[in-house]
Image (cartoon, one colour):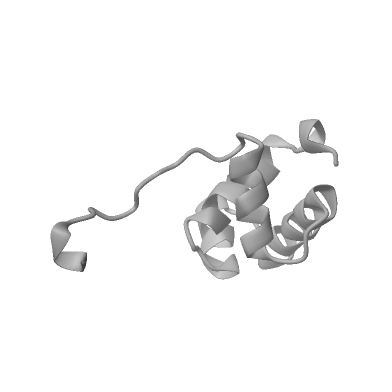
Amino acid sequence: MYIEKITPREKEVLQLISEAHSCKEIASKLYISQNTVNTHRKNLLSKFQTRNSAGLVRMGFEHGILKHKCLWPLTSELY
């Protein structure tokens, strides 16, 4: 696995994937084409040796690339 060879742009794409953004949304936020987003995603899948976005996110957290970020307030109303 080549974690140290992940580019800053791949890290940005991974962060946005972990925040459940679509390919189109990621492309818009980073001012790149959807094809470029897909290329970064494919490169990440290869580098992490995983098959899907869930695996990318899991590996990102396991290797300290992604940090926990609560996207919504957790309340007792949810339970």
